Image (cartoon, rainbow over all chains, first blue to last red; front, side, top):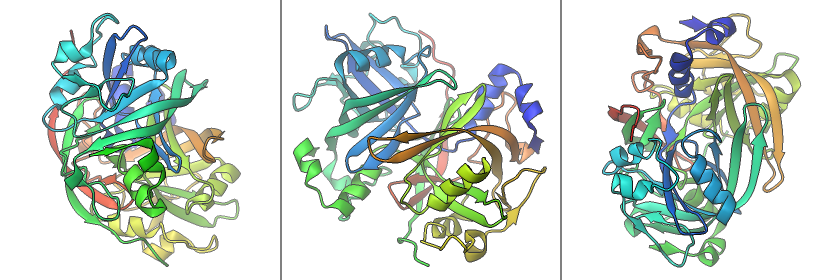
Length: 202
Length: 202
């Protein structure tokens, strides 16, 4: 089935949101933990976290300023710190619930029952029941004029995970941690490994 | 288990590459099809394609200029067009093989046996055996000084997929197309849906 540029432009906006959000492939499922300078916490699920580099260890994410994670964006710009917490099979429904439009004064930790924890003096809250989580320091943010989104780039400065999940070569078996994948706007998936493939040579 | 900033900095570089690449969560698996102005084709697997917006329909990806997909980057900048093709369970091993360091004059389509096809006059080659694929026009590229990577932003102008995979609301069941997910540098996964969750309300 073929959709031309003209067909895409004329799709109903809600239909197009579901459709276009499905095209990139499977996405990561992460909870972003933040707080403001007064210590009011915030938690938001995002599917736009992506690997940017290993040396220095950098991670990127996209936030739409008028979307639900706008409080997250405000807190990151205010404090410079945030946590990224893998969503797993046990907590994915609570994680999804953080996408409801809570007021800034309401903490999604309390509203959803996901417990906050503070680790190793890091200045943002982690999600206790996430089994792979890390602390990130804001390095750059870029306003993308093309559609008004913000690209947030941070450096990973603290990592917490189950020891047994790390292979000898540094690979983390996130499937063993029951980390979930997202497709489209609202579909959550567990995974089954096909294989780890050897470094490709000619 | 806790890794401090200092511990992370002192990891062996290959270990750190596997480790940090695992942290973002599950990633998309896509083949980028390009050609130069003389019609020499190129195909590269990337795990950095991400959704940027539905209106206009925009997709982003990160390319490291000195990595294997550098020929892809050169072709995109030369012609302004590329295709994004979901990697599925049937072709993931051939897809992975495109990451070998072929010379620019060698086409990964021929080297890996993945067949190229041209659809609806789009000026870049698609992967015939991909079941969800789309044509993209380059809109912007940003050099990210922080680590020398390039952010490529394009507009989706043509989409080809199996009709039966589209739900009534526009959601595409990419699991039914056997699209795979990636973790770390080299691990490929099929998925099993937990649920599609309703739009979250307070």
